[in-house]
Length: 501
Image (spheres, rainbow, N blue to C red):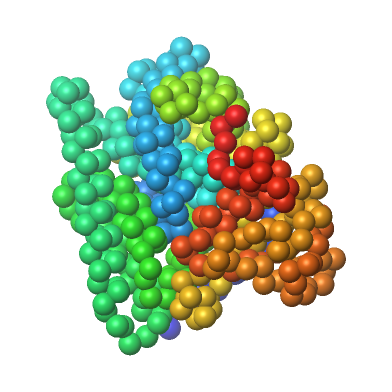
């Protein structure tokens, strides 16, 4: 056995285990875990242990592989019932909003930093994509209305596709970019349209096949499901279409089907996504040269302020206006447009194409991601409270690999009774949950017990609720209604629907 391989394996295993432990530590300290992973990569690199890594082409390839897994997990875990009402808004944010953001950031860095137009627009394009990993990991810890969460998650899953295409177009040499603008626009439309169609075909075919496959081992179903999303990407790429959009569409269709061993599929995809995030961020940390970052701080702050204070709010306003989204929701959508590994991965495209100024672009994007991720992710909760868009009574799904739940076609929900919620003081039978939903366990002061109909809920209680798939949405609406108006919610005309006021 090669001793070098053994050392690399030892180092890799140690990094993964440290990164897994860092997730818990980062949640306690309120520091986004992606920054911990980036720090691990920097510590292993040329300024730390001395590992020298400067292969931008390999980073780009491995980064795309990681993004496929991360986007697939986002699609598999997205619920169609919450995604469908915001699909138009998310698609507009991912197309029109992206174009507005690119133009405004490009104009700002052209005027303020003196960059030529091509490089300025590359800055805008690279920074216009919100990061699926950062959004999925951060928002799912907050208690927000389903509409806001679904919009941000769908946008982050969908906007990678057009942004990758635009960055590739802007990174081409003048000889390669000889086509007129209308040809490039048609090409962009083709790639997005065909990518969506390929993803839909892969998802529908996969649903049909997995329901009838009768595979000999339960462990094969998760592998097959994730393999189908990768197949969607590859098929889209072969047809010169958007593979990333194909992955997301296929993931949504597969994740919302009643597949055998569905909970195992979601758990497997979640684990793969975490591994992809860890590997991606560590790799990006290795690629960066810390000695060059000092010179990138000022341009990063300029570009970041232009993005956060001007480009993102205006792109959200232009995109959300036709859908009647309130100003408070627009404010939160603007602040929650998190950047993470995706912009850094996108910055490797012009780097690998040897675009003049690409080295500085990579450094600026790296510094910007670190600064603004730390700033935005740590302030999301207080900003949501300040804007009044929090929803403390929202139920959150817990993935439990239990055969009885799967046979029942049921989900396990968790609900906490926060201060100010009118769930406090309500008896269990006064919740009036639909048939098919039941409070199965209450955790109070560290002690769990099975409640009876006359059990009175208290502030601080944690509830586990089993709800069949057919009544899950109705159950969540009823819990929201009782939290807002108490046991007489329906008497006051409160039905727990999402609100924009």
